Figure 1 (cartoon, rainbow, N blue to C red):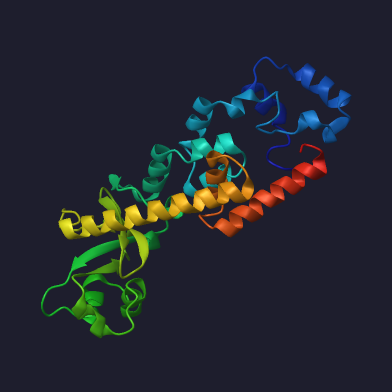
Figure 2 (cartoon, rainbow, N blue to C red):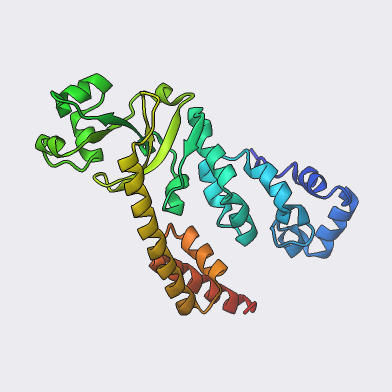
Length: 270
């Protein structure tokens, strides 16, 4: 059984560039030394495939991709990364599997959108008198340990010092048509897409804490970018690109940058 793309390669090329005929493709293949020729490589940098660097075309394609494929696309080149990082495209892909109505809020970490598994979501439960972790586990059909793990609780006594608990979602249908709020929970120490079953949203205190954490994180991000720019001796856009493809890890960003410099040096592009 052959590869699914082998027999339709000419059709793909004609769709990408209708001005290229099958005969010219055959001629170019033979003149470039067969299948191993450089002209046969489908790449955003190949001059025959200008459509693959057109932002409008990329948007049409990327709008149909799931989150994992968008993450892969963002690693191809800067143009693809820029389009794949568009907030509208990311939000649409984030909502699609769960049929969410809306996602409100701007995450601090750019890697937030790269994971839209069920574990990314949680229900906000405001604690009232008589609540226990065991009772909440029964009420929401989840495990006691899952609640403790999500909220970083060592024991059940931690419930009395909190105004709310995040409850893991066990039934995906709860998310259908719902509105989630991107929040950084101070106890869970992570950003979560929070669902409020009562139809409301975060209270003023929660919103204020979110703004404070976001301001602090943004200042920290600026310092990291400035440090990367000095270390790499590049512009801010390049530093931001490597930081984004490294999930916000400065050391990984420097490693990626060094690998690219090494590759350019070996191929004679530097």
